[in-house]
Length: 198
Image 1 (cartoon, rainbow, N blue to C red):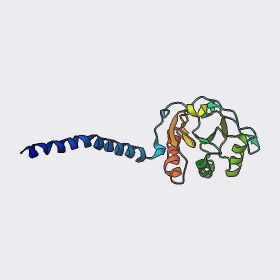
Image 2 (image 1 turned 60 degrees about the vertical axis):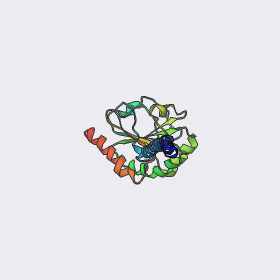
Image 3 (image 1 turned 180 degrees about the vertical axis):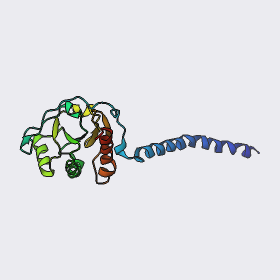
C-alpha cells in the first residue's frame, strides 16, 4: 500500500515540471507565427497620415537629367502633387533588383518620383542611375542617415506614397518587386491619385 501512495505524487510533479516548457513552446510558436506569418512590406508606420518630414536634402552633385541638373529635396515639392519617395543606395542589393521597375513606373507622369540616396558615395550613386536609368525628378542626398530616421526608415530600400496634401499615405518596407508593383504599390498610388481628385 505504501507503493501505491508514492506513485501518484511523482507523476503529478512531472506535469508541474513540464508545464513551464509547454508554456514556453506555446509562446515561441506564437512569436514565430507573428514574425514570419505576415507580409514584411506591411509593417505599419507611425508616420501614416502625418506630413512628410520637412527635411531639405542637397542634390546629388553632377546628376543631370535631360541636360538639366537634378534638384535636391525641398519639402515644398510635396504640396499639390502625389509623390512616390524611394530610399535607395548603390550598395543595396535589392535596390538593383527594383531599379528597372521604378524606371518603368517613372513613365507615368501623373505623380512624381523622388529619390533619397542613403549613405552612398556620389560616384557610385551616379553610376547606379546611369546603369538602370533615372526615374527620379528629384534626388536628395542623405549622407549621414538623419533624414531617413525622420522618415522612419528601417533599412533600404523603402518606398513611400505621399498624397497631394503632403501627408504620407503608404509605406512599403523592402524592395519593389514584380509581385508587388502592380498589386500593392500601383494600387496605393491609384488610391492617392483618386483621393487627390485627379
